[in-house]
Amino acid sequence: MLDNNLKDKTIVLCVCAGIAAYKSVEVLRLLQKQGARVRVIMTQGVKEFIGSLTFQVLSGNPVFTTLFDKGEDSSIRHIEWAEEADLVVIAPATANIIGKIANGIADDALSTFMLAVKCPVVVCPSMNTYMYENRAVQRNIDILEGDGFTIVEPGTGELACGVTGAGRFPEPRFVVDRIINCLSPKDLLGKKVLITAGPTREAIDPVRYISNHSSGKMGYAIAKIAEFRGADVTLISGPVHVESPLNVTIIPVLSALEMRDAFLSGLDDTDIAIKVAAVADYRAKQTADHKIKKNDDQMIIELEKNPDILKEAGMKKKHQFLVGFAAETRDLVENARKKLDAKNLDMIVGNLVGDPSSGFGTESNTVTLFYRDGKKESLESMDKEQVAHVLLDRIMARIRER
Ligand code: C5P
Figure 1 (cartoon, rainbow, N blue to C red):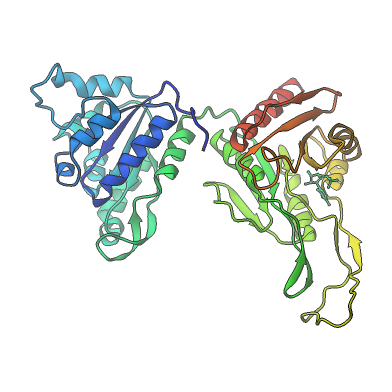
Figure 2: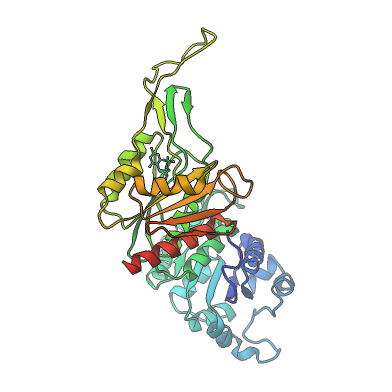
């Protein structure tokens, strides 16, 4: 998650009386880390779980709990806060508040405030599974969704009440991601983006394979940010251990041949194709049906070349904006330019792997963008999500120039 995504944004965090209320403290902290100014509204009931002082001290603002506070101008605070908010998040949202908002009831500070809200609202339902599955609750959630509220689906697992099922408060960073998503400009709306990520795995026998160190983090970051910015994203992913971005269609593959099929069949329908995957250049000519036994001192595996997927795509491309990645250990400029031409790309992103701030498995990346017209742009070392933002900025600028 990038820092400073919510700089200068005012966010109102509404906390309801659920056992997960303590987790909203973490949401508050993460929002602040992203640069947001946070104000907190609590229902009366939540005071049984957590004191308002915690939120007051951490947010640096008075906490709004009742319409009838004796303090300064509290009688209009619900209107002022609603007017000044860039986004409202209700976390945890109980069945009670969901029902009240869905039906326009205003009988306390929070529900009255909600009637005056005009900005985007993120709702995190969090309750016992039976309550969550209750038809009235589901009906009310549907009403909120229909009214344009963003619903963050609760997690599934063992709940505080001992029941196992849906209703868990989601990971706080996940909630904050949804908030950043809501507030991101949707400049990629209507664009179909096809991304490949991770390594490929070329089987030698049922237990062994040839692969590489690609973690998939860069490709996943681009998929996530493209979705944030409104794109319709498909991610063809080799085997990785990265959290799947929400609302992205993921096609899992193992080998280069599987990746080729998935990529080429999605290409026609795509506006922007970004091939980040580290595809194995060779595969075993023959895959043994059974585990190969240890015999001689030496063993020779015959390899054959995998298809160059991007080159094939470059030959087939029509309107698509095609981007490749070049991970090199030396001669970056020369190798990247060669690939750009050979594969008929619009852009290639070069990075030197092996450096601690760049490449496989790292959180940050130091890349140089090479363009078809011979221009290049070296970016400073930055978080992979930041790289994704800059990359998408540049792609969109080039597409607009066409
Ligand atoms: O030629 P090289 O493998 O270094 O090129 C890297 C770029 O080409 C990456 O974008 C990678 O995803 C893509 N590639 C491919 N098919 C291959 C090898 C690489 O699409 N067989």
